[in-house]
Image 1 (cartoon, rainbow, N blue to C red):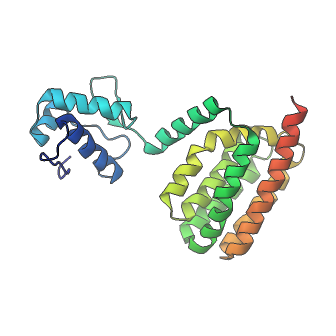
Image 2 (cartoon, rainbow, N blue to C red):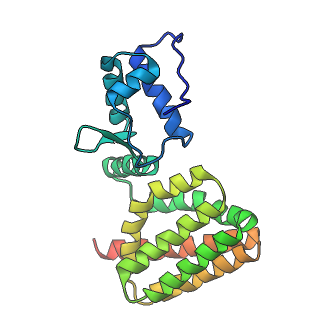
Image 3 (tube, rainbow, N blue to C red):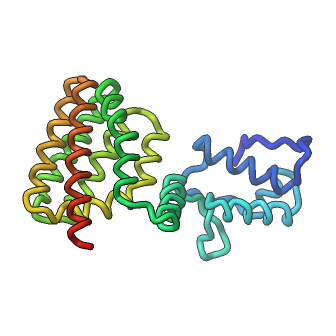
Length: 236
């Protein structure tokens, strides 16, 4: 916890300043998911504040989903990606977002993601994408495993853009994507066709062809949307 910024002059409650300093350490990566927070006493010594202030600061961080109790009187730093994913899941549930809305968002996000990935991908990104294609092929007869590999492919493309927010947004809609995939995968032959489309997208990214990567991602999403909506209507 050394080196955390703390401004005692700011006109805010002391516990707010402590909470903001710890939150900044998390956002800057000086505290990462799974790290244990120092004890209330140690935090008090670090910031020269009373234990009541450090206790209240931790309560604020817990309410924000940044830390959680370890069940033994201590606190652990949470994964911020999971926080966004949980919040998005709750929003989707409360708003009753339908599949059509999800696919519109996917087109907005993933078509450009494919284009950026083609222009920015590294050798390690290509290795990850290749491995993911292999996982998809190996699980053609296992819908659950194929679903996970399919979503992983799209997340890998987001990582290849080098844009961390894009990755977080993809992770945020992951659960909604999974539910939509569960509908589409029941269509006979869909998994095999999907695999070939993913291979084509990967080939465009390997070739650094941003335009082709966007076009192939658009074609894939439009087809899957059409078939998923048709399947959903039949099951009503």
